[in-house]
Length: 404
Image 1 (cartoon, one colour):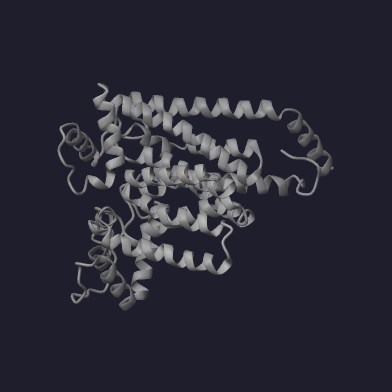
Image 2: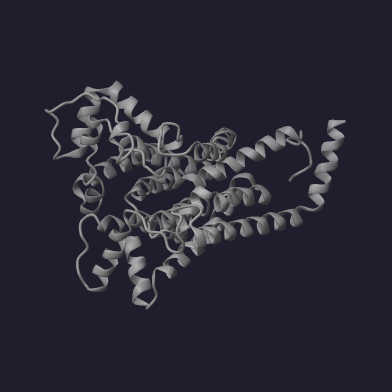
């Protein structure tokens, strides 16, 4: 009986696949436009005021753009976001304003959803599931919220997807054009936010791993690439500035969990013998001397970023809405990872997500979940893969002639 019903449903789906896909796309676009409309007119997803949204870091980017337009040098902390500052400066030099920057962010979000769709197809080979994954990215209010801000978040979300897509394409196609394209996109992504610099060693590691090099040479390169990047954070100017300005050792000894919320700090061992002039040496010495406490702090930071339970300033309604969106996403993503772990695209996504989680563990969680939100699109595409697996299992079609 169940098999007959499943067969009937699958036959109907198979006959109307294009119609179903078009319907999904229309619903997603309408929802995306609606969310941005209410956020623009009333600030329903963000600040409560209309128009362009301004955050605590907005002045940094606007001032940086003015500095470039006036041929002045950027301040040290501004150089870490030079990609986004250049975008604002370029728009202003064309005679436009911040509204046009917002328009570019919205267009980039739509364009990146196509890249996310392509990533999903390379994993599942299924257009409908890929549309769902890209759609979840476009309609998630916690992501949409940032598109109207003069902040790096929206553009970084988009370029992180582009970087993931380009790395996957490069290791599939194995052509110089795709290798160069991937390199350029990764560098642009790194210029938008310092978090993006972790993509550089990840990109080269995947290039080597999926190359035709001999196994011994592969292992040697895979060992040397992270090591070179590790030392580059100390000796290469642009990388050193991105990491040095973050007082990691002091934050660890302070027990900082969420930046700006000292009331949530946990008790950590104090060690006045730790030097702070070399952040890498200091951090690893401190971690080795206090491994259990450091692991506890890292774990609390990650869980705090991904779950809102201990954030007293958030309403119960907000927390319920957050958990309603995110708990299924996390669970489905885990299912997707397990079943598609041998797919190159899934491996790329997983490593990039893991690298951003490690940054949170190393530094701190964020008041507005910004660090988690940056990888939310990738979590959603993994979750869509998980949905596909559940559907296949539930409808008993894993080994049948039917395909959704």
